[in-house]
Length: 137
Image (cartoon, rainbow, N blue to C red; front, side, top):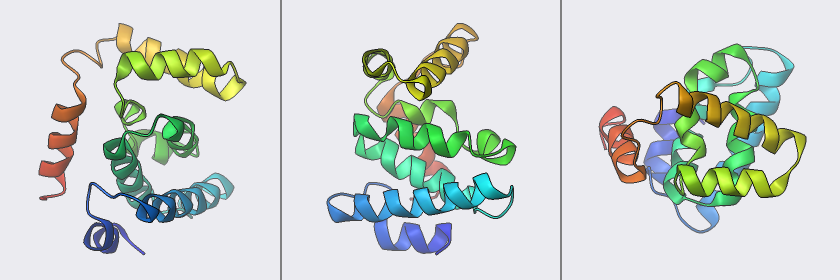
């Protein structure tokens, strides 16, 4: 499946079992990309992250972080803001409470990006609309 097929099948605001399919697709391409840069489809990975961002399920944060850190290409393709489908404050609170090494790394990156101004004027709805424009939906 490529990103065009995923948009046709799931749209940008998937629900229910479609979210499970997207999570599995993201996991598969993340594993491929981690094995060898370019083996995973980073454009499809980015779309999966957008779809999960739009669903706003806090528990998807580390799945998105794992995808973002799979390779240099993935890191460039997947915006750090996509970790924050429930909002920046909620995401930082969630990651702080987890206390795992992965959560701490994601939180540290969020804090660095926030300090650098990457979250200036950030809002979930506005960011979602930005991606709707990007994908012409």
